[in-house]
Image 1: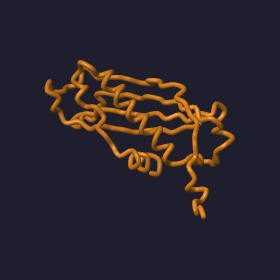
Image 2: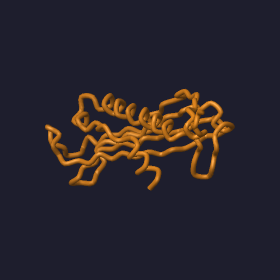
Image 3: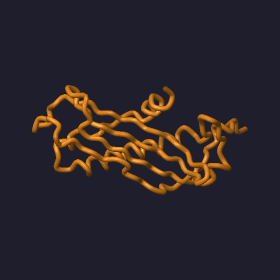
Image 4: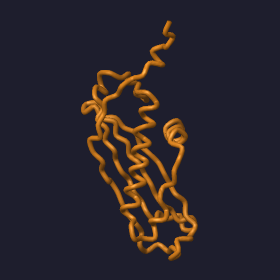
Length: 151
């Protein structure tokens, strides 16, 4: 007898990456930073999650910044939008005011893709600058999603 419930049943989600858009990139070349990059800094990471049901899209925007600890000033700022086309988003998945009934693992997968790609874009954009050494470190995506979207 198979005791798997509907919750345990694997779900196949068809999706494509429709677009990746660098929405903002800036550096402060007037900021005082040691040539060896040892100035105290903080790395900021955030995300927004939006849906466009008319176009069956989930849009994730990753915000990444390098902030000077001593001056509380953004030294580097990057925002990248990821547009995922989800086949049948509007018709196949439960949609409520503050949630979409897609599996958590799927959200973790597309968030992992988005954060990892942002890491690569940041490295490419800061090549040959002092900011290159402030790349986004590896993070626990599940914890990041919980902390970002569940308050």
